[in-house]
Image: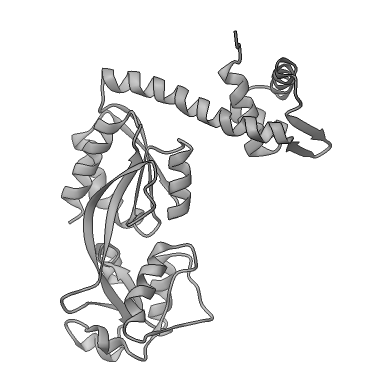
Length: 298
């Protein structure tokens, strides 16, 4: 009969992630000698070396790498068992790990935080910001429960629900010629310099798709890491940028030196949705959060 303890698998995964026994022990809330001894026992039980121990350098052997991959699945499944039991006792209570794009989170959360606390008081939201590929990876690894991002995405093994659609708007220096207008047509942007986010942000790709049809030139010597950096660069007169509508409202719509103008209809839009694992045990909580986001994001 196989007798492998889950805690030993957690120790092994922690070493794989940290590449350091001391940091792995801290992560697992045990002493380093305890963690090291348990992993040695695991190697003896399995009959293979899992870890190469060198001064200031910890690496996994080939079988160690393969076993870590399977250990992650086992740990994920064990957490699903506990979560499933808890969700049956109270499906709208407990922890729900939610990841949002950096171009969505800061602008959506202020609109939904109070309604979420009021409607789902027993639900503890753990919030993270990741780019699209990280959200997909962490969903597959079981490190988050639901992702809020721009659609479409690769949905292998995942469920999806569209939550809302938001239009793009044009952010320009407040002294720009187009700032005198109530709205901007796509053709009005021909010949303008466009400021964009760095590679890896899906909003960059969406903006490029919009502008490729009208001949706008991207500023080649500049890549921003956030929408707020873009906004500040626009204020200096360096160029124009496209913002999602939520990022242009409230306090964000009053940035000094920046004018926001909508596109004339039909405006380009992005679709924002939620994705989660098909096997998730948190479906009632995910559905409840999605309903609130869809209701309050508009």
